Length: 326
Image (cartoon, rainbow, N blue to C red; front, side):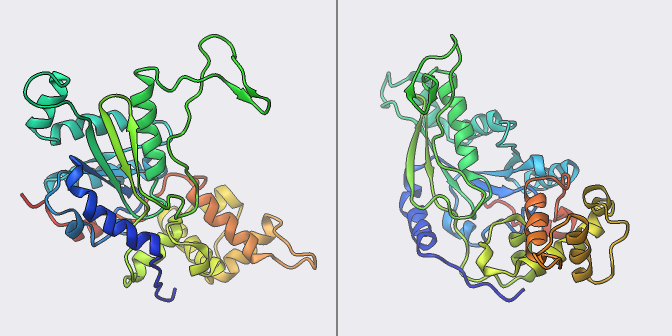
């Protein structure tokens, strides 16, 4: 892949907002993609956040190899970080985030929360800032945190709806309204917003912050694999061919199990061509539709249909994480 230079204006603004609002938050939630913690970590983040208490969240753990995810969490904890895996789809690990955030918030805030405003300190919410590059699941995580905060106090129970407007369904049947919009494409969140969650918690949601130049070919390719870089910045066919080659190395049986390919050809282009033929991705003239096949492969990987696969081993990439400064 050619070097990507992609730094939209809303991301530059997000970086300024981090600096401006950092003084108003108690703890920062740094969200990484569990499949690629090194590639999905903005190298500018330490300089932006300074010594502010921080939780490192390995999100999308349901898509990653659980053995490697636990190894990453263990490594980060050994370096002094509060870190752990989270599955924003089913809420696994979300409760631990809230507990760890309270532990990091400091004795003054914990005392204020415990007294509920009585005594010398005024009552206030625990304030969290959520940061990370695009498409690591920040919005899904916020919605899960919101479900937990509102559900425990029955603040999100609303009547069922259909196209004709509100109506009441069966007793006790309610649904949760999403706090923020989510999507499979990077850049869904465009502006910062404070989100109140229940009585004791508020979140600051920011757009994903991507650095101006992706100099490392591994980082650039890996971010394209997981969907953190917009499609117009890469060639889908070449990227899918490369992903097929990676899958043949880390999960040799996936091409056979998922696509029915008996053996992978030496050339990546041949693999994608054969896959298009087997899966009947054809143009009107009967020739293989390589773009359609490429989109299928990339989508299958990003949505976990190829299995729980990690792209980075902490034994190789863990050295790039600096220990927490006290």
